Image 1 (tube, rainbow, N blue to C red):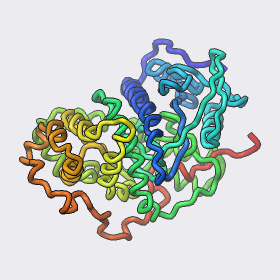
Image 2: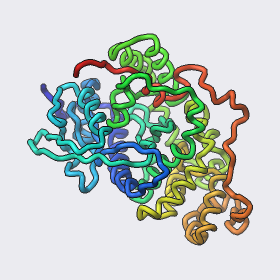
Image 3: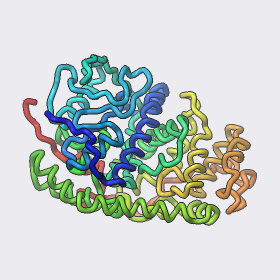
Image 4: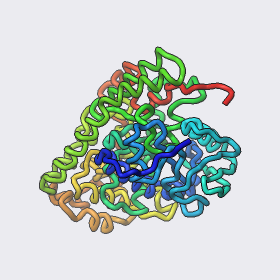
Length: 437
């Protein structure tokens, strides 16, 4: 098989920038995921993880494959784009054999890698350079932390098995502890909100789905991951089509046709929106953001299942705060991440706290004698806009931060169609080809 090289041709510059941003995010998150394994929380539901992440340009259009090479040195083979220090693999390694399994079709390789991961046993991989490395899967609390596809960088979705976060989180340089906060927070969302999200009817009736691949690979082609940011229309259309058809080709084609025509438009809208936000005065921006809840900021751009998840965002804050110290992290990492994103005007994500979540965070700081630390972090416009003083916040005895999971009507929580649960839910229902291989 002939692999793509960078021949110097003109490529989509927006896609190129998004690929680089995604690579930065993966390099920040993968070591944090490994760190989270030290938690060993006995109360967690568990998932298997790998100490590295891979990407592939397989099935992408020719020009876009060149962009992958230029941005991340990724070609059609499974290419390591992030790795923990002791993983035995390095960024740029190409995996060509997995415990004796070898295929040119990268999707089949990804599915095999996902199965080896979930078996939980060490297994050998061979790189294109001829090295053989023993990979050791490890367990973490349930809730994969994954990033939006590069064609739809603002997409986000929250599910008890996995959450997808927008790429704007990595525009500022985030610290290792802030990346750890993202991972723990996502796991906390699964632990604290999973039961409520499961009020949706859910069953995984087939063994192999697009979710298995997406839980492992980064930036899988539009046929597997792209979704319209504005209203999740692509995921809904794809899931509906998949429910009426069988086999890999029909499912992938349905998702591709539903999403591809919308993906580049969504990317342009995202870049324009971020530019507009940054251009606003910081104080005004901070005031608007803190007054607005997450759902008010993002509008209808998340699924109804994600809307359910937002009702326990403050619970996830507390879950991460209570556990980050146990794995050697900074308990103020959530606050520093909030302020860093707020200062840049990057507000369409789950890690910029609204006023109520900020009050709850302050209550946690008071309970753990970290009020001064929090005040030092949040000394900027976010506090000045509201003249919000930590001493004015309710004490722990007033049950600050203990918000019940709110919904005006439980009827709103029931999905009206197969795509209402978001891209993750849709991928769980997308069958892949099954057979002896």
